[in-house]
Amino acid sequence: SNQQTIILAMDVSGSMRAADVQPNRLVAAQEAAKSFIKDLPRTVKVGIVAFAGSAQVAQLPTTNHEDLVTAIDSFQLQRATATGNAIVVSLATLFPDAGIDVEQFSSPSRQRGAAIDQNEKKLKEFTPVAPGSFTSAAVIMLTDGQRTTGVDPLDAAKAAADRGVRIYTVGVGTVDGETIGFEGWSMRVRLDEETLKAVANKTNAEYFYAGTANDLKKVYETLSSKLTVEKKETEISALFALGAAVLTLLSAGLSLLWFNRIL
Image (cartoon, rainbow, N blue to C red):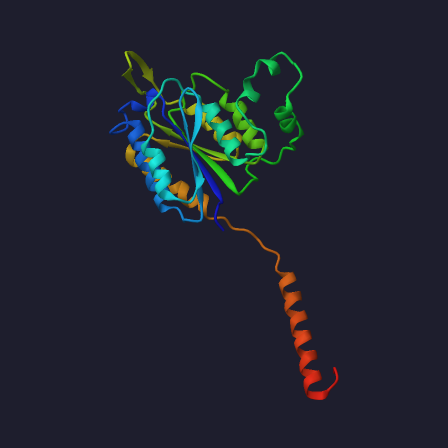
């Protein structure tokens, strides 16, 4: 069977302009994502979440590959990196009626212990399930992993784990990184593998390292096979019972037709 929905959460922060992955991290990520989408069956819905200092839905889940490519090509680099926000927005996209939003993870009212609002009540009433048990959807988060603002990604990962959603993390870039300039400032950007591994482990998923553009392409090829094929055992005894009932009715009808009575 096919996974129903995959959310691609893609980093568009300034650090993604680093050229340690050629031609740069962002372009390599865009090309790999588009290749990944191209190879997916048309029955699989894909949504796009773009994140930097905040996270937004760039494309709601759809089977239209052309719309997905358009969303990916429209990425614009922004400041800061909020990996936790990306996870929260991805969950809100998968569960639109669950009352999930970023404020629930960082609102001053919660920190002060004030009365919870209606959305928080929905979260409170939720019954956690086993990590990785929700097989109808998954999140793939591609980033250099350096959170600078927003929700703690491990808190967001716990929310995903409680809903059984796996978050496959893809670290793009080199561990040593490089110094980049962006809008008049410069910074050293390094891959934060520790956080990405922790997010994947907490949700019973996997972390993948992509140090080159070719590595990134291979990662997406691997994910494509992991996420689109799922084996399930199906109870079929009811089908046999139905078949037996049909045969019984058929034999009774033939008996009435031939002998004017049921034998």
